[in-house]
Image (tube, rainbow, N blue to C red):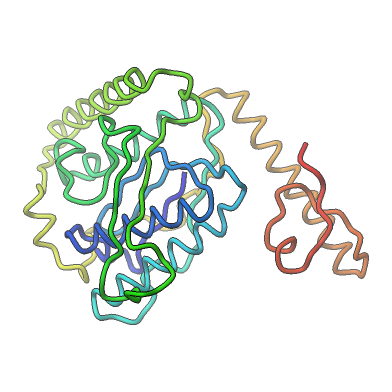
Length: 286
């Protein structure tokens, strides 16, 4: 699961036909270029969530291209020059089991509902993948205003939304029904919670009236935890954390030896930057 916020939490992704077209096109092109399979997405006014599978091990390239070109296109659209995305890197969480995958997909699709913006996910005017459209191909035309008319990028890009890996064995209709039921159940929980708290709903019109340069109020708590893995099963989560710890320890050890001049130091499988830019030796896939 990939999450990224706009700089200063501004509403620079506020839904509109133009913004939706820009983000949809860039997501479709990035997924095609880097072999990323998309399972769920929701683009809110100041951040986005993507649930994806990094099929070819090129997630850093995917993120770099997606966030670079959405920033360039949206800056051209809004007439601004500064950073569009927050300075910290995207949050990337590894979903280790079926419960985590389904839970994060539901979280993604109901994010606008949880924020009190709409009552149901399909009312959100921005980009959101709908369970009923699983398996369908979404087409996005190359937006005007930044890309060259005769440039190398395609005039139209297709984005397919696929079932989650843990549920890929199910018939498409069964998977869509399962996801829809889980989303509806979560929306019902949120409705009860909001009523108990006396919270209202901003609604589509309220969202569309917001300025792209506004920020939400109140401010968000700072220095929250940023998890690296998520799992419904305790032992699967522990195993994933241990693999991550082993990778970090192996990387640090190889880094120290490589910096000391040991150019044949072997980095753990999954090393990206140094393998790509410095040609370091890397272990084979386990």
